[in-house]
Image 1: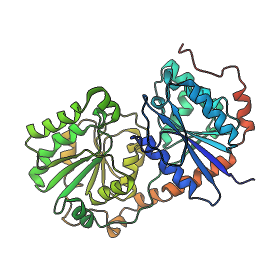
Image 2: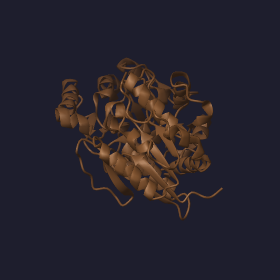
Image 3: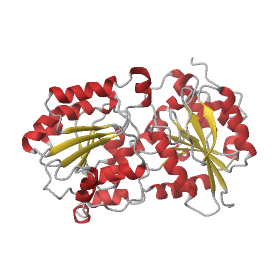
Image 4: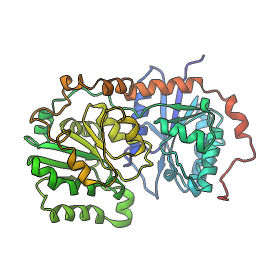
Length: 406
């Protein structure tokens, strides 16, 4: 088998602010570092007329609403003789109805396509189903990050099981950092820190944690809830900072200004890992069950932090078998009731030291091989096995092109 020489990734890329941009960038770096003489490039999606100061790893940009850019990207990839293209798919990052413009690119490619689905819808619209089925058809392999994704692909979209691969969301290769040292560096010494990170939006359920804080403080007066992350760019474009301001007002109304801290920052990976290192509990109080992946959940879990989460799909799978604590959606009282198990840790002991981790063998075993370098190896294995003959017939099908939505 001839080793792969050139791999292209299509998706969002840093410095664009979103989870897929972070994921694509991390994966490209891990693949590039996995083997000498392996070249990687990113074809980056630009949103709503925005432009970004991309690094050299981004070889080409696509304006999401401009079909000609998709056609041009296909020509670029074919001319560059890339061995395989890895598509990062989320309906909202591509133009056209249900993101159908991406088909103008995929159906013109001469090399195999490996598609990673960041969302798998249980109840797709007709247009979404048509786009998904066409993407599946032209892809040599479909990658999802949770077994729930495999289940939905088989039951809803009738995808053959041998076409589906499950590879867990990568986590950084990051050494253990003493929480007290990280707290001192970041200005949270002598506090019990609860952390949520991500682009701020109503679906994150931050209100629920804010409402839980008064009861937590009755039992743990040194607790602080740190909400780290900029407001989602789409929300800022449509509403300005009205949502963030409403959350801050909610904190003031509850008298919690000294115990809820909003840090309006989009941080790099190194800074994020420092914040995770300092926290005593990581919380994802998300409100939407149909969330297939959460990068911040994977990061915090991978760094050995106690995690409290609502039962969205990724959390249910990752935190199963006692690897974390699940609470009902929108239930502040349930979060408060967990104080003794999670928030109220002895001062100076967060449950993330090496000795504490030794008491959580199920979590350690689950994390093994889940680093981004491990994901890069798994992706390379899949791409090496993917063959062009399996997709050439699908590409020549007359069904190529955008769906009509019927």
